[in-house]
Image (cartoon, rainbow, N blue to C red; front, side):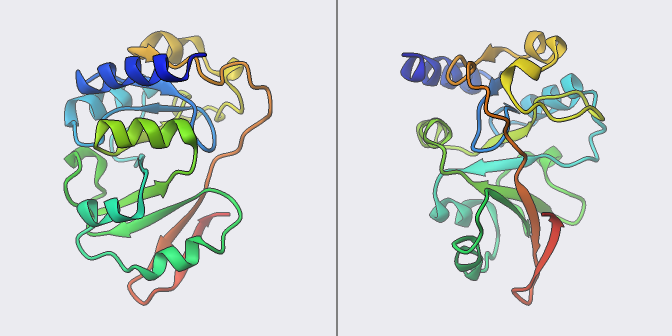
Length: 189
């Protein structure tokens, strides 16, 4: 019922530089156009998060990685085929994203999403979107929409209705760093 209406409203918000509260393939997230530095700053302010703490980016297709990582090692996809849960990979050589998303070592965390809503949203926006947990900095990540602090709900420009009623607890993604020698360093299992 809400799916298409939410996609349209979220797209309008993202295209105008706004921030959204939306379900992902893991936990509820706060997102924006990952190429818009002003929108990214809004998320840091809402979360009361220091701007040196990183946020991740969601992509819908493997080929999109070529637009945002200068020299991606395609072996990463063989690794991702072996993992059982959604996994965010930290890559070096970030390009084409908002400067305030990219780490001082030019790294960025990117997750390829399989979630239907996220994939539609990203594909139709034509750009990656930021995903950071829907909580104030230092607080627990909410496992469902009902656990999201009212400050976060009131602070976004649009709240997606899709999947708000779900009560199945969700967990954040695993995080790994993809090293130059094609080895993996596990940051968060």
